[in-house]
Length: 577
Image (cartoon, one colour):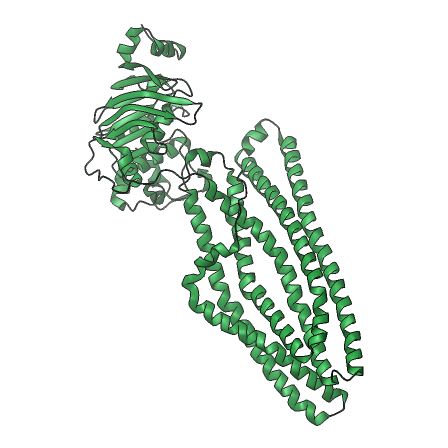
């Protein structure tokens, strides 16, 4: 779970710079819109006097003027709303893209601790809320604040003392709105945290529904879901309760203030300090104040909720990124596939050393198997080769070049991973194999043939056939063969296999193994071996224990040593005589 960090909407202002033309025109529309209100107040005062005095001949032209001003106002309002909407949405889009781009650059330890449901909520609901708040700030809050100032200025021009009396209530209203806003912010953060937890639970539930039913645990899951939605209901109700309380409290103060002003205005007319038409205009302007105050109050609450969302989005900026490329990276050129580890030290934290003084040399075109218990360092070695992590000491060399001096993307184009559990994105089969790298249809088909996948691809309707979400229309063997094709389509020099057949039946495994044998030809291959029967023909087998290579050699050489490897073979009922 990400901890919300401090964030301010003003930090997003530089993102609006490139949209200065519609913002400038929209600002002009705002000014026209605001200026029309004191004009309408003046016209309304004259109209009320004409109607109250029975002067019909004066009322008609006044109404015509009012209609003209009202038409200009509404045209300006349409202009500001439409012109300012697009920049706000584009900035929201840019913010979401920037956050997603950063998400792709986080270190894997940072990614692994994050909830997928929580991240999905932040990049959808939180990002939408931030966009809505930015739009309201520009097209609603800004005009409302300007209108408030213009109307107060006009009222001061009509009667300064009366306006000063009107402003006596302002500090009380501001303090109340501020207090309610702080409470809404806290309640919104709690509510959004509850929604994130709910999204995370839903992601787990959908992904694990097969397991839930297999263990008849539906009631347990239903109870967990009920507790989550009840927590969300209570947190959400607290936010709504605060907003519901704010409106009548502030509204009562506004009503009381208006009645007091009417009484004071009557007294000033009685003393001759103010004329009737002037007070009519003043009263209309006073009523006009209610709308911008109401908008600012409501928008302030939404602003606080949006601030909570922005803080949750900005929390991603506190997470560590993978190391950047070097300032003057080396160029790989034609890669032969020689791999060398020199005195490599690596630890995940200060109390958990894994590799200490690890040395290894792999000749080009060789097949090397990594065996050992869970936690021995096999997957960590793959992570170091892919530069997902970097060693604290020592060097890892590819064809004599330090991986730390290469561009990560160029390095990863020469290393291809076939994971044990093949994750495929939805889309066409061609898109799945290409994986956004721009390979030609010929290269994609050649990779599929190499992976022994073309037969079932054609049976599905060809390379344009779609893979459904979560690959529900593919078998395990088909997924693995597409993963092999995806790995070899770019003709990488090194192939990293996290034994891709350990969860398959014998017949399916034979088809996948055939694809693997084709894919391994002419490449350096490192295999994480869970079942030793699959790597007996490896050129070299490395036995790892707690980050140390305790044995190495061929299958027969290691058996003759009667050490750890021989013990593992006996445990898996492999003939050792």
